[in-house]
Length: 201
Image (cartoon, rainbow, N blue to C red; front, side, top):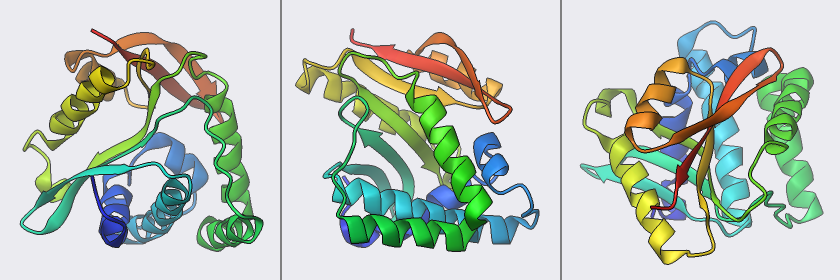
């Protein structure tokens, strides 16, 4: 697990890893410069990780040579509604607006609401994001994190599996090779998402 003082590194890793992610392109449609996109997305993920910490959820990662190389954001309860203090919530909302604009913030909220409706009813581990720093790709860090999460199913007998959504057809095959099953498709804001589940063995 990553420590809170590693969150800024983790946010930068995710910002770079998700630079071409279709849902985030919808949130940031007018930012073409890759360096600027990565910077803005690191702010978005900084807020996501702050929410993660406030809700008491762990952050998983891989460290290489003292630096965060890969990150996985999970939630251990279906439809988690963290009790974030009002002022904290408002502060995070305004920071999001500052980073991606009001339109981008509203699109992000709409997308999260749409995908949230499709989550399994039974208790499960939700894999909301997993990313590897571009220079560290090819070292199988993503698979290592998926293997670690799968091992958690043996600890939490109440979970029926690990659930995720992915927006890339190529990643559907990647997750299938890792043992995930395709549940179906859904669309939000013009983006097709594939719903997948790693069932309990």
